[in-house]
Length: 318
Image (cartoon, rainbow, N blue to C red; front, side, top):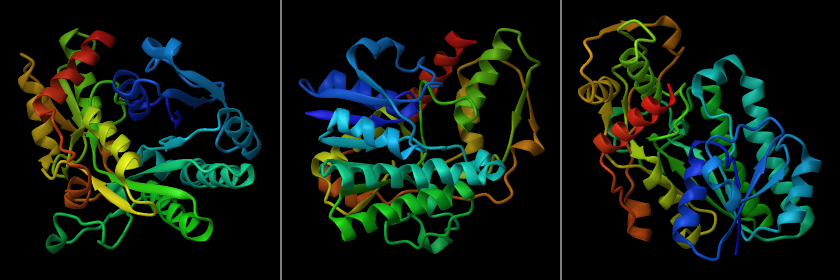
């Protein structure tokens, strides 16, 4: 079986490739890369995977890559995935996330291939959630509060529309927050961990810069998340959508406290206006009943272990 991962050089993509190589013998792993892609996340497995150059924004290169690979499964993870960047670059976010996915779908139709396709959506699609809607079910209204969230809603609904219109074998997930080693430094858990590691090595003052510490998020270890992605295509129903999350919430302030508990630092906490969003989602927590009932998946790595692994990752990097 041939599996294609878009975004293989990224955070979740690299962990998914690693999971398949370690647990699914006989599966060939392919990834799409751009000429300017950074390879540090896959350097340790680069001789075990097959990389094909393409840019999702370029329809011709996408079609050419798919014609070469002829994948049986596609995990579509490539995206502009940082919410604050979407405020600064809304058009670019839409281009990568929405037009990129359309180019992928159109190439599949033109080539008359029929892979199973996983579309990695986001809990940010739910956006404004009212107290009586917690935990969030898949049937909850989508009220996106950022350009990124709007782009993920578009990806989600396009996957449904192409399933209904053309019979594309799409399965959608709405992944809640996930973190762990290799998480990009712009994301909150990783940013905190990097700041702590830098302070420990005397590379910055003992001040942790923070944004909104009151937001509540449902965190899952990325290594558990990618297992769910695999199960999504192994057992998921075509055209369906599934929440993937732990069902537990943590305040961002709690995440910071856990990370600091692994260090002997005495630090000050300082709010940074640049880290505040024009509108923020107060709480996101998954009702994962639908997915768990279908697959028996459950998160296995506790948040404390995830955060310790993340901190140690940054201790080795800085």
